[in-house]
Length: 352
Image (tube, rainbow, N blue to C red; front, side, top):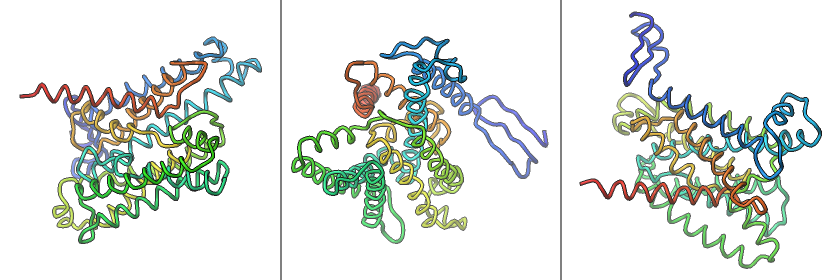
């Protein structure tokens, strides 16, 4: 076929003239994304009508269509729906950020929560909350500033001959993260008890109290960074093959790395500033996605789908494991992460 080629094996849907492919879609990745998004939608529907406040499925659907009672409308549209959408958006954002940094460092441990960016965001938020008694907006801005400054310091210290190398970046990031974690502990210990408790709850990652203005703001902001991530996919694949190879093809590796850092840090800082640090999603979602699609590439689409499903699942569990005192979602993601890495360790231990 000259204008369209379909192959339902490993690859591809090839659209456009054969000499200049317009779109290349991995069949396995496409099927996986569809299944994961269907599962996420089903989980979202379950989260809409289930929970401590009793709302039946017909009542929830009526509220979503604008014909619900005052009670069901408040539960569904004001409390649950924005929380579900925010979990999906932030899960996808964190997963894509992790995929970018793992590709950038050529290391599966090179996620933003390992190399210090989330810790830096928490530091910025703590300084605003505990030292300046800032409000919600001030805390978000402080978290954004903390993440950006931490990323700048880490990449400045890790850069060598104009480029940040993978292992060096991870080592520097872990060191900076350890220093900032000590600073965070000191800030919490020296603060007033009530302020420290509130800051600690925020630092555990919490989706409670989400409103529609927050959802729209996060959706618009993340859309900008996600567009940048999509545009970075091809240049980063060349960089993944090797920096000398990409340079030989005329690619400005330093510029690609700089833009990738901005996009990755932006997605992580946005999530952290909105709901606090949420561990595991950025680290494990890209790894799970690559295992499912059996590729070593960037896998942005599958990573986003896995991240959205995992964070929504963690939030559903966090709200229902103890309805009288729901857990912060960050505690559940860490627990799921521990189980995942335990399984991974046992699986690797069985290999000869």
